[in-house]
Image (cartoon, rainbow, N blue to C red):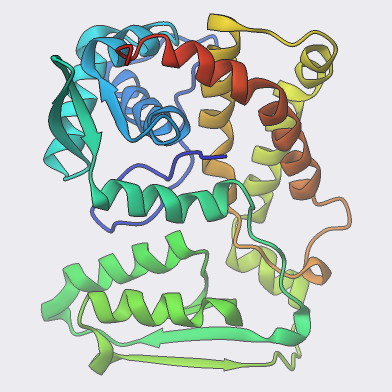
Length: 302
């Protein structure tokens, strides 16, 4: 199974949940519509184009995405921006103009799959924590802001001025983020155990916006729980399966990236992440095959 990574950004890592979705029932502003086009096209590349061979015909992509409520100019603009960012390369196959995923796009989508499809398996509390502290000079202010964005996107929480924390398994990722920005002389990384005295759950909820992440998971369950039961009884096909599949993945894919994957012991007893992940898996099991079969009909016949 293949989904989509978060859309490409200046930091090359994930970003926060989008607010403009396909099923809010509200009218998109121009900015929201543009944002929605970009995020939905990225979802399309990961959930449809990648499993269908890493290439898409332009006309087929426009038609399929129009079935999800995107207009032609929005799709073409989003594709153009992704091409500029190095995600897509023009390629003609069997006389049909289209775009192929680049190595950059394929690698990013594959990395995103690890989070989107498998979520972040909670570590054991005994594994400890990774602490990143940095003191970046004012002359490198832009790099300092980029490092903060990198760490936040990797799932680090801010526990003080220039002090960030995450489960210890995030140490290699933190080291890579620091190295990519050339900030090794200004950064210190520790791993170790937490010895108090502040309550660890209180610290976690103060350091991450876990209430918002909780709400996101519950919103997904509220939106798709009853629908999952209905489609398991009578599986949709064709266009209906395709649009449901793409919209559902687009709604889901931001949630695991926001979740830092903390040990169960520091989360509320009714943390909804696992139940939301199980619901996502149920939906994919029903929708993925008919959705891809529908999309394949817009590819040139061999």
